Length: 252
Image (tube, helix red, strand yellow):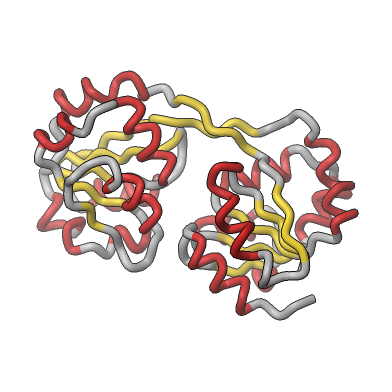
């Protein structure tokens, strides 16, 4: 099995090291870079003025840039709001920084978040909920919570930029590596790859196996022409979930 990991470099290394004894070869290609989002400098003001009862962090990047915006956990501790993280990696990034209790769903997806008791209608009705995220994404989470009576605010603290330099060489490089399995942990990553490929390369791309982090990403790949039987949902973006899914794949 020749596996390609596409997540940003700082988050890829532990997964790559864990994969090495499991597969024939593992390669890395960063296809997006993470930069400051439009709301980054406004977070202290939002925290004060919007007074959210609940803050939801949808990724470790969301925590990283939230910390960059707030600098000190003192203000967050004083706000007395419920903190919710989409998964264990996001929770760890948050709890390493602050002393607040952080809730995490068993299923580390938007669907898992929405199953939490603290996000049901009787808990969120008429309450302010802030979703800390990148630019775009998690619309289903906001739509469902709005339907349950919550007032939703997006705090877009980071944004993803597709890498274009050298992208025209990816296809030939991946073919040379004989890549058969690609790890995709966000819609933005898949779009960055497919956007930079010719029609011939996209045909090759769609014939690979994909290990994805959620059903939402799986649905996006299906909409882009990837066959459903080539998509394997790890039900989480953390290393353990991805490793467990890859371990179940037949070698090829």
